[in-house]
Length: 267
Image (cartoon, rainbow, N blue to C red; front, top):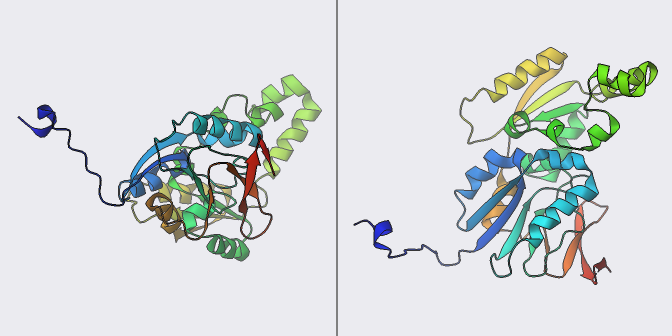
């Protein structure tokens, strides 16, 4: 009879090990899955669609808060957020019984590159850079998000659908505006990670750059920031909101800060 069948109930709990809930955007799926498997702690991941960003900051925050509110007290030592500021979609989040932990970052590119400083340096070299990763290539379902901001503005429609809804002149204006969203890009930068094998993502990214007439480049990613998130090493580059407090924008290099929350309001 094996250990499972015997009902002995072996549970491995290494000294100092904690239990975390990870709420994360699916664009980080491969990176965080790889890191969670190596964490000294038990990390339970819950993946949220990238399309959540396209619902707007208020609705994104409301969905994240709903997931946090569903967690039972005492179930986890901390709730980790695999997100960034994300157009203010993570502001105001709070938990009454466990700390919330999130990297100090404006968007997920920082999470793929390892630091705000490196992202800023790369941006300074070429502001017209479009970034791609495995997650953005295989899990970008923003157009599939029901009632998204794009849908409300008509950006998810075909040209014929826009003509039917808005008329020829307005449809032409919208189409030109949408095309202008990528006019300022001249380079595609693929961020490769150490766990990647030859799955063809980089080659597809190179072809996409060629189709658009953009320069192509590839850089090594850095998962140290995400590794520290799931390993519980939050001494720097993270904001921790204890129970009763919430995230707020700091409007400086720190990106995020913590505010007291009483009676449903921030002080």
